Image (cartoon, rainbow, N blue to C red):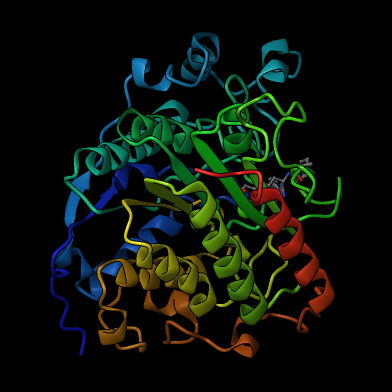
Length: 389
Ligand code: ZLM
Ligand code: CA
Ligand code: ZN
């Protein structure tokens, strides 16, 4: 079992840096960079690092970060100290609150996860990698001059900008339970990036409060970005069957109409059942099926992380998804190897615990009717009729 070999005929690169994982957002903050250590140790205990080109990522340069962010914001981020209660700048940049605290090494943390996504994108653009992975990236809420929702620097926007130097069109797909608002906003007015986010939507009752079905791009038809934002708003409790159906149907339609030359998939693991912040019933296999479907399209593929607030399940999902990328998912023993560091953190020694094992309390009822799912698909089918390459 677990005979891991390099995939035949294509190259996967894995970009990470142990220094990223050492940062702390503060006591009991849901975002825990050490989940990356847990994921990495599980990936390595299966021996999957031997099947990839592995890179210790570097810090992004100021110039690279300025491809999207303002110099003022970056300067502030660099020098930010734990805020004084009356510091006005903190309010301007949305830094220092409980979602986006200022912590030790903040700028280093941001530059490193961004450096990893930029390098991963450059390898795809140069044809050095066919699939590139950065589980420390995927921080989709960050704006040009503002932190938001645990995100300070938008590594996804920076990576897509690299891809656009080589490829005419990039399809961005976001399976984090939250709306990918920062990436959507950054490419709102261009027809070279089609953004697709699947998320829980309940108006202002669920962060960030945007991403309804009718948010499809600029209203002005003459704007090239019109119709190039696709949003799939869902209710609590969606299961694997519905989720995979929606994913394949909608991504398939986006591929046919938009004809992307590369794909970026944000694999936020807070869409999994049992997540501390999430509300869905998606399981590791359903989440992984999205990665497998994107891979099957045969385009340069960038996989980034994102949310994920129950670290043991984040590690399971990103381990399974790494195995899909290198095409060894069928060869993996679902029993977590005995020599895995932190093995006891996993509670159950399988990559694929049942819903009963995952859920702490009562099952979450599925509030998504078949009628609603069909309504979403037909609305997006109408929208994509306006997108044609
Ligand atoms: N309060 N501590 C997803 C980003 C979600 C905004 C409501 C903060 C939390 C949350 C922080 C320890 C991604 C909001 C929430 C309480 C204003 C959000 C610190 C618990 C804690 O215990 C906590 C004292 C904290 C934050 C919960 N924040 C849950 N949900 C969202 C942001 C990021 O997964 O999409 C990508 C990485 N913020 O709902 C409030 C409105 C701040
Ligand atoms: Ca999403
Ligand atoms: Zn999220």
